[in-house]
Image (cartoon, rainbow, N blue to C red; front, top):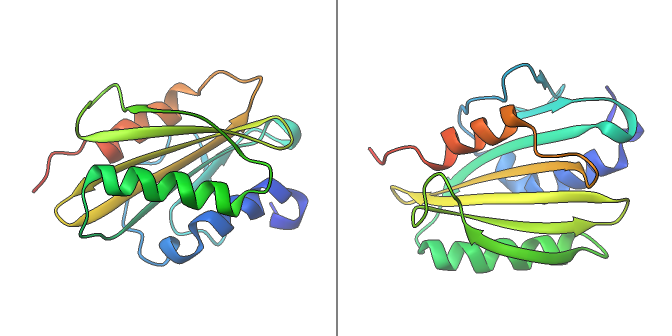
Length: 151
């Protein structure tokens, strides 16, 4: 897969550009394919049905609320025409992680999951067509990344 064929994929990499270099291992969505050249990124589907899952970890000295504000601002600044839909506690581990949902141009949904664990910001990005229900494998990978018990 070439990034030029998927402009939305290029946008996803822009959103995680500085974070991708700091990424550690993450459970990938089961059955998804690695994105060539991405350390912690996976994809499934083709063409308009392409879905993307990215994982990143970086040093962070703030609280979950600080990270929530930062996530929303970053997405709105990076994605022209992005519309904030909602921000909620992440259901599988409320109080430990959050999930912000955005509608992007091209009928795409971006879910940004985030948590703070041991001075690290854990961030996942799940991009899918607005017409597609969330993929169970992506949701499970997100849970594994965001709800990990602190060491």
